[in-house]
Length: 252
Image 1 (tube, rainbow, N blue to C red):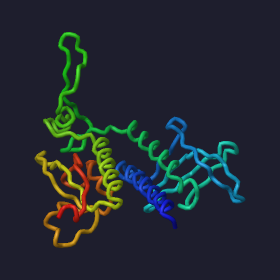
Image 2 (cartoon, rainbow, N blue to C red):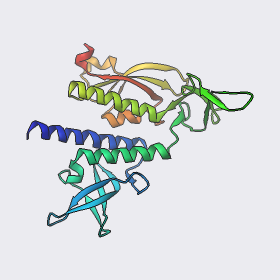
Image 3 (cartoon, helix red, strand yellow):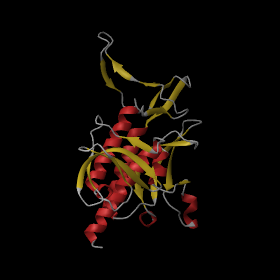
Image 4 (spheres, one colour):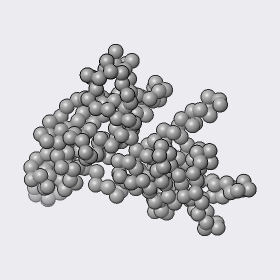
């Protein structure tokens, strides 16, 4: 395998990982794409090797990978793409189109700003209003950090989970492109659900040698597990910001 081919495979793996992470944090195992979701087109080769232009209809998470259900534009037939060696799952451009389509779906359909205490989206934040015209002027600097939760009936820390996950993805991309390796640690800010206090911590993305255990706040198995911590889940804290990724070598 030449270097360029390996890079393409690594890029495909990264994009598929991001698709799986999006699906996991949104608690779904499959996503339906429609013509209204910026349709994604791929080439599917039939049993005799003839190419067919198809639109991607369904994306399904299967273990550490994905499968596709594609729709032939001409015949109207549906086909399943299950092998990573098939063109539709081996082309980083098409995979990136799928990632963008899924991202747009979740951004449109989700309420992303949540109360860090209870997870409710029934929150309000401060804004500057012209008292004479009642027109909106601007949000204050802390508008998307602190607000009021109608469920908790108190002031709380709020978090835009979409923006936090977007920041995680960007920092991860910067690290992997700079060092050409996967990060071991994420340096981030968390909010405790009970008292709304913030703490800066190190979260591991893989198993770390025991001698470093005292410096690790929490362990994840993967990037998708880490991104899930930005949502309101079963832990007693929420990740509200990722400063950067690093590894033990850089820390020492």
